[in-house]
Image (cartoon, rainbow, N blue to C red; front, side, top):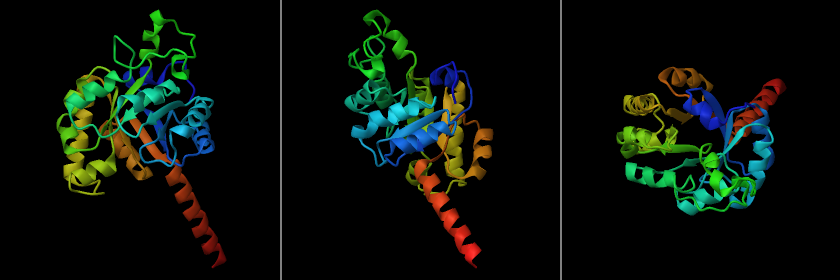
Length: 257
């Protein structure tokens, strides 16, 4: 979805945006996702088939469609985050953060000093290949989207502190990890899990941040929007291929009789 405003501006304005996960390791698949009209596409380096070696091709493919290209690195380490940003990521989805202290440190990796401790290398794609002067790097800092995942009971307990951290724009629930860590694996209607979702949404609304989640079942989209989620992933290239392949085969077998 092409717009004159950056994704971060739209998110912080409270706009509901839809995205998708890209895990097949295919820049062509990433381009297909962007052309479908999603607001953002996350290149998944934590669980996806792609590596940093393919990341640049993914980012350029997504950018050409008008969607924002985000990256989930393998971990929240400074060099992992910095590398993705230097290659041109519009934002970072940071996995596996459990405490407010970890979050406060991780968000400093998203921005150049004095707003953070991102390494300054202005000839990178992420710094617009030397077209931004040293005095103007704040313009780059301003547009980076900071997404922190909520995947553990500890993260849920500290959700308000997470959301209150400057530079955190989205608290993003990973349903599989969160449900497993809560002891209700895959039980997405369990009250323990739903209570955790409400805690995350309440924290985001109190601090003017966005609540995010990755969903795979279209029947779940409406209820989660009603709950207050505004940064919503609607599946992945993996799921679209698997579901499409299974549906086509089922249709063929039914036609055969």
